[in-house]
Length: 275
Image 1 (cartoon, rainbow, N blue to C red):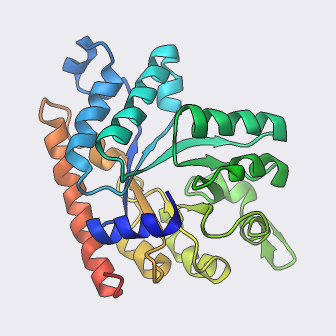
Image 2 (cartoon, rainbow, N blue to C red):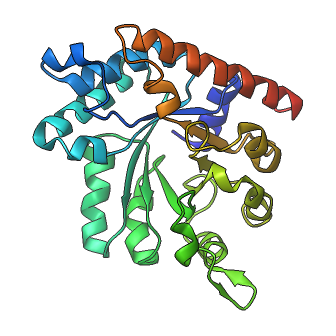
């Protein structure tokens, strides 16, 4: 999926919602545990009720890898289900990979060729040769970690050499590797005020913004500082949607929560004259 196609989907759905499929086997409704693939059955039900309001899905791979081969099977089934039934939706592998070039080549092959994701989250610490293999695929994206929402982000990301903070260095340097059509950045919603400074460096790029909802981030604040003329945001919500209910009505409630967020996003898009 290219930049224009993603923006068209945002305008069509009046939404920039990314639903995070952080499908924890210990939190899904108990009745699903008797099925052949509990994580897939959970995801399938969630997808069917939230696809109308979501422009992207983001499985966090830790929740699948922790289940061994059955988790990987569930992940593959999930991606294939989205591709078959909702082909317009952008799919992100939240994998946070990044290693020496030949290893990154294999990671890129895994996520883009074997599993057909649209994007993968990548850590920038090892530099260009650890990122470039992911950028060699047409209409596939790198989502580079820039400024995260966790407490430990203060340990390194705000370190300044002169007047330039480390996360700002990541934003500036990585633009030498790819433009807005192949590179996005992770920016945590709990640091929404920093989006104004980030937009000065990457005014046209898409930003993947986790941390809205259960983690305390404000959608209004994110939109205030982060929206651009092409929207430029994918705002992720995970627990607040997929675990809003733990009964047999879990999928219905998830759909209702997704719709609530979509309606708020629609108002924000109209307010900023994007739709």
